[in-house]
Image (cartoon, rainbow, N blue to C red; front, side, top):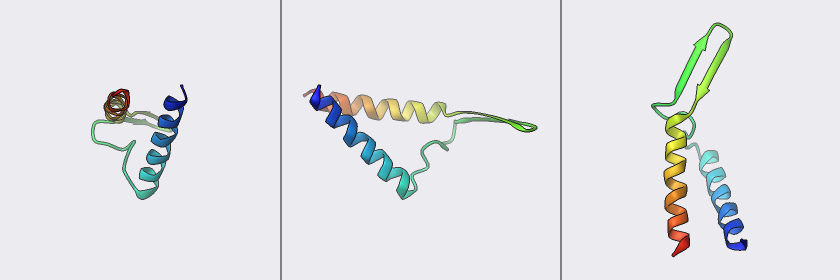
Length: 64
């Protein structure tokens, strides 16, 4: 359990640094944005897929 918490902390720190550096995570091509009048619906489907793949690869590396 401590190893998982440390890995999660490192991932959050790296993600924060990448976002601060200007990585356009959350505005990737393929993310769904629907604007109608005063309402906006945003669903980051491609961003979710990218984050899922990266986390899956990271967890596979940490298990070894």
